[in-house]
Image 1 (cartoon, rainbow, N blue to C red):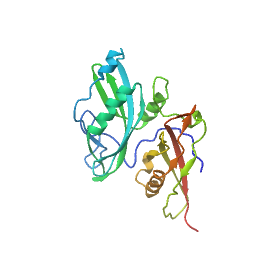
Image 2: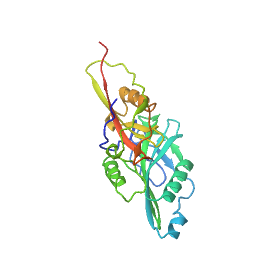
Image 3: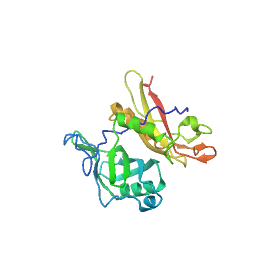
Image 4: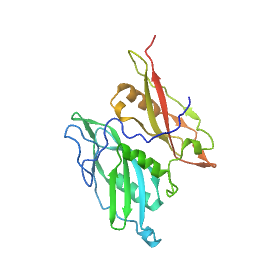
Length: 240
């Protein structure tokens, strides 16, 4: 099965991923709201960075919250210095969450988060829509010490070692679903997601459920293991 090259960073599954508490804006209705984040504890500037004369930094991460508001997974996808990533990771694991609401019902969903570390304070924000595309271009800049690489930068395309096909019944014409996902340094699929317009679709759910079970050989760049972002397209057809 061929893995397609990444074009954009997909955002959410299955609904919008705006935070509803703490330092984040409230933009949804009560019946339709994204992940609620309650910041607990103080997120401070790492003292080690000041000692090294580094006065700013960034971290980008993805969080997944289930329908009960539990943090089900999280992944750091980029940082300028490891100390900033450690501080952001500790905060993500310490915070409390509320699930996304769709028509008043709690749903599992995903959110991309940016941490901007400055001496005067740390700014935390979500990255919806066009901002996410811009964020992905920024991650590719060389100023990031760690970032997801492009498939074209790998020594070779990762070989799947375990593939589970999506299972779903369909009536009518064939339909295509595209799932975006990370492959981490161990070859595990992380944070599979679909585009927003497909986020509440049964076929999209089947495709995501399948991809999250896939495994690959570890992605390699210049012989070293790396994080990579890719996407896979599925075409569902009715049984003849």
